[in-house]
Image 1 (cartoon, rainbow, N blue to C red):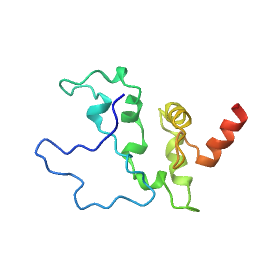
Image 2: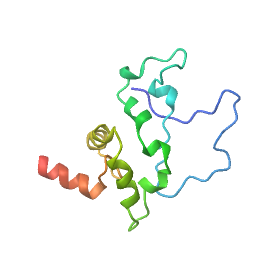
Image 3: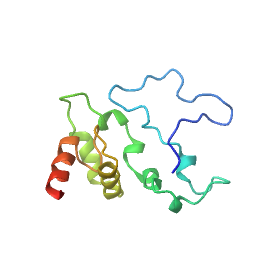
Image 4: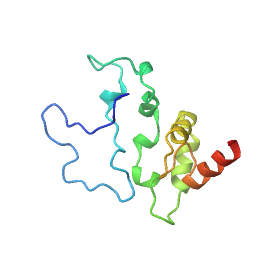
Amino acid sequence: MAQAEFRSDRTGADPFAGLKRPSGVPDDWFVDPVLLGVPGVPGVRPADDNPLSWQTDSLCAQTDPEAFFPEKGGSTRDAKRICQTCEVKAQCLEYALQNDERFGIWGGLSERERRKLRKQAG
């Protein structure tokens, strides 16, 4: 599986130059759509072949990532509200559980809620 990484556009310009990463957002939060296999991109395998292709349909990718990685003690309400209507919520939660994600809201659950879910399942 390809590792998610930042890639600049074809001109070589960094579209995120000068922007500060919100605190609490992991360095690997950005997922390159080319690596996901976005349909219509020449030379890229179909999205169905990539286990992370669900991320292209995630609502969190279209919103402020800082809401999904709140500061300690910060509210998770906005992120969870977005997750409730996301069509890939189940895939997101499955990914977080399989990869032992320790930070952020994934599949509508906080780390504490995912830990509790693991204990109940185990």
